Each structure stands twice: as C-alpha cells, then as structure tokens.
Length: 234
Image 1 (cartoon, rainbow, N blue to C red):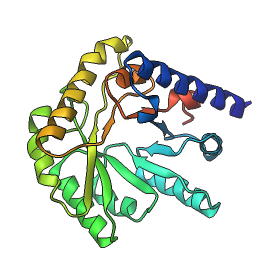
Image 2: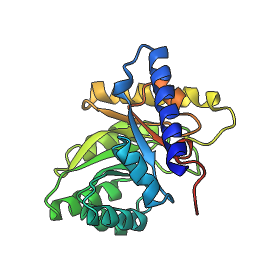
Image 3: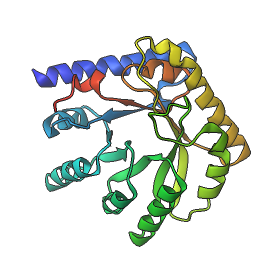
Image 4: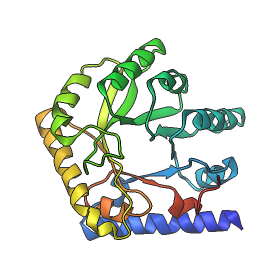
C-alpha cells in the first residue's frame, strides 16, 4: 500500500514538473527532482530509488551518515545532497562520504573555507551551491543578494570547491504565487553572476508547496519531500 501511494505521488510530481516546464517552453529534462528524505524510513527511500529517483536530500549530518551506511551495506549507491544549515564541526563527516555529491547550503566564508580544507584532506573536489537569502528573511540562513558577487568571486578560487550554482529556501505561504517575485529575483541573480563572474549550472529552488512556480521561473533542481512521501514520520 505504501509503495503504491509513493509511486502515485512521484508520478504526480513528475507530471506537474512537465506541465510547469511546458507552460514556459522549457524542456522538463532540465529539471532534476531531489527527494527530501529527512525523517523518512529507508524502505520508502528504496521504493523511490527503484522507481528511478537518483538524488536524495538530507538536512542532518548524523541521519545522512546512518542512512548512507545502511545503503552501502546493501550495495545500494545513492547520490546525497546536504540541504540544511551546516555547522563547521560537522563538515569532516560529510567529506568522508563519497556519495555526498553536493552541499547546497554554503552560507558563509568560514563554512566555505572549512569545506575546502576538509575536501583537500580527503583528496576530493566538492560540488557546492551558495545559499541566498533572497527574501531577506531573518529566520533563514544565506548570503544576501547584494553580497553574492563578492562572495562568489572569493570562493571560486578555492581549489577543492566546485561552485555549481545557487540555492534558496523561501518562507511557507498559503498562497505560493506570492513567492513568484523571489524566484524571478533568484533567476535574475543567477543569470547576472553567470554573465559577470562564472557560468553557473544549477539553480536549486522550490519545495512541495511551490515547486511548480519555481520550475516556471527557471529552477534546475526542485527539493520535494511531503508531496512524494506524504507527511513525515517523526
């Protein structure tokens, strides 16, 4: 029963992404679906992986470690993205996990330096996104848009970081249409930095409540949890 529900939900999300992309003449294959698996059971993640979902997102290092170890023990390789606020003292654990393919939440120079240092120690180059606080929300982390260019110019020179793009987390609103202007601002910033500094590839924005609008406004990664898994199990 759980499997049928999850697969049905997944298909709905995929169809919604296709429709949103088509509405603005985008190719839906430009949009990657990241399944937000925090607080979800391993069996539910397996169902999605078997259905073709490749990228999973976690926001707590310990939970990510435990799940990664479980899947490795079963010879199942997943691509993990870390999507939560990352404390510098936890970076070393992420850098030991080869399957942690990207940190989407680089929100300070000190964190970027620590990731670069730990990546060097583990002889790897780590893909990262810069988290932008596009809505100037005091409850969210991230670089303010006016500081984004200076910040990007600093960290693109870090030898063990591969800066691939930008990410944002927007507040939850009952009417997600009110968030559209923030998504537009993110795309504008993405395009400006790509033109003035370095060509960026990924724009991670949009969650369960607003991912369709994010796709319409240029997202290349949408982070969807509840719409696929159902309400989280705590």
